[in-house]
Image (cartoon, chains in turn blue, red):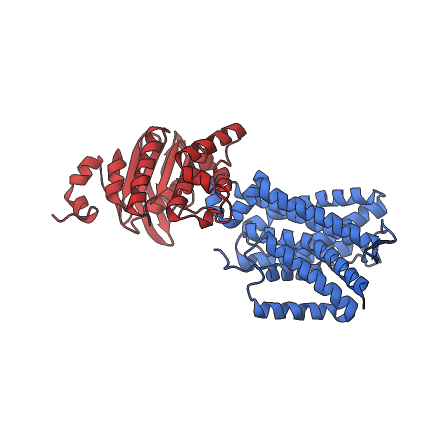
Length: 290
Length: 238
């Protein structure tokens, strides 16, 4: 193995870590605001991929336009989920888990019934390789990573500087005190679901051309996103998720190349379990706030 | 009448926290409610802000009935609430906390002007503007909590034990701040305190709350000469 191989593994790892970040960021935001672990969050990713497939392969829209449209459609679905399901189960742990599992199964079955079992693929838009520091990289992977980076930075800037973004942070830190400032809990919840759903849909649309579409594709991504959040530290919102996702992407990429794709997942979970043994509260772990 | 609480009964965790309480706040006045720990003072303020739902009774503000409204709607009607324990946003900066206080305000120039005024009144907050609220000292946190509540340009300000845990020097400072807010900014105040002496010295009218009921109500001068108040709340030997 030489430096080029290592660089390739790092770039691939960063690229998949960044797309995972899109899913994990939304999941942790929804958890921070609604105090619900939305197990159907992976299905928003899956639906994003199907939406892009439907729009670009069947309806003939441009791939990027299809992604933007999918983000809007899935965000609208997220609004409906918040309004008619999650809002009633805010901060009620077990019932909300049951609801989100039900929703997950419902969305999976709907896609299975609606589109059937047959192979579905999104035609890759970018072909070929780019050469970076003497290393040959897949152009598609690089572009996916770049787009994901732009989206993550946009969300961070929004949370930091935009008034509604600041309100999201305020509610995550103290919901009651926020309501005393005139911040509407319901509109912050809705906005959080819009952001989370749109990001998950974008991740699905970006990774769609890399994998075959499958109605079950959301669940493994959900698991990894949960892992990224736990690894980063449940209490910290953004910083932990970013680091957690990148570590998972990198570990997965190294394990896939060095040991083989079949047992990469096992290695990944073992390494994360080991890290959590040493640091049970994750990288940025702090006491969970009540 | 700016605020009229009529025969309010509130249950808190199954127990009766307030029983048939009637309290009035006139426009432009400072009204204080004194009482021991657990007398129901905080529950009363929380009920006004819609954080606790009354079992019976009514709350009227500026001629509108507000019990049953959402907290955020009550805040937008002009009731500022400095809650027990300050409840700042600990991982946001001092400036961000102030801006959150102005969340209901739409006029950007007005918000900037308000921040400027608050910095003038509390210069330490300007010095600490970029610091996280969680890193401030107790007195600074209390000033920020009051500043944040003022950012919403309230008509009525609810203050829940602003002097709790502060040094005697800071308690005196809080007293001056209450007077300033009332006299210069023309904001009516409902002040809840365990420091009865301080509270009665700034108030225009006072209530004594004991185990969820109004035991006494009168002008502060009269309350301060009342034997029960002197013995139970001012620590005087009779």
